[in-house]
Image (cartoon, rainbow, N blue to C red; front, side):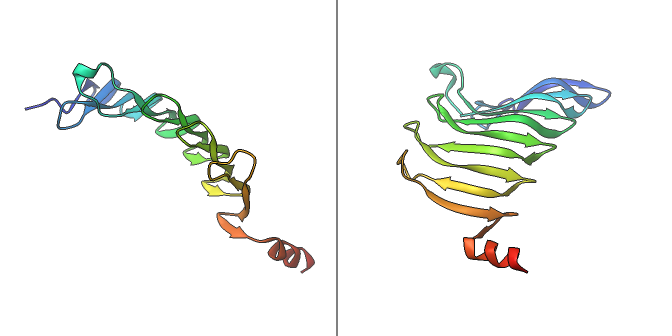
Amino acid sequence: GNVMGSGKFLDKQKDSTWKLYNRQGQLILKSFYEIGITNGLQQVFYPTDRSQGPSSVMEKYFMIDGLIEGKWQQFFKDGSIKSKGNFSEGSKSGDFVYYLEDGTIDARGSYVNNLKHGKWYYYAGENNNASEINYFEGEPINEDDLINTNEE
């Protein structure tokens, strides 16, 4: 009996802002469509009871022609940043940072075509003390592998 979604259709395809709800009637997703294709700001929400006020944003990102593009962010329930990065044509690309709930950095590094690439730093809650792992096309490597590869 609850509404699961609301929005407009144009030529039998989703168009404009669409809202999706869970079985309890809580807003969980707001998407923008242009004639059946997701374009523009997309927002995922933490389910909350309507009596508690508006839902808090869990994740937000932009889509162009159905692919995530540009700035991407995730949030904790209190609204503080959980993770951030960038997408290019639907793939993680460039620098990403992951945070703990107290605001300290948990991990940071870069992606190329959705794969970890280059140096990644893992902090385990310590801002000034990080372990370091070097990645090549998503696979962890060690410095000896780099030296042997360069000598061949």
